[in-house]
Figure 1: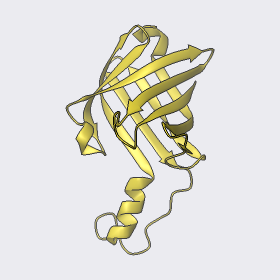
Figure 2: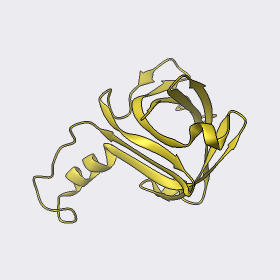
Figure 3: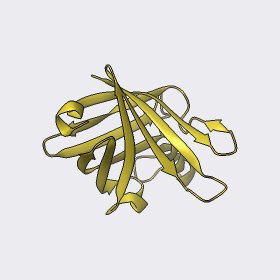
Length: 140
């Protein structure tokens, strides 16, 4: 795998997290929208729960905290540089809705089959929440 092969836009198909204890969860449900794009100037990823709720209590900054938390929990975005090393794609995160990722790298094991790109990552290794995240993307 190399940067030329993955370059372009990929639409989200699914996102599941398989816990070491056997649980399978879909962090934002099974109806998603969004994409990941790999380009000459970096990468950008956005994933959203389909049909997100509009705020009822106020505007972007004045809505109540519960609505803002719901918006955060139904949307993920991050961007930065990337590099491809064999079957691993490293996302070097510069900006993220989840600030803990900023300045770090997210490792994704990549498998390309036809026009579907599978990206997997191990999360919270060594804890009771250890799991494998698997996201499927289709070339746009």
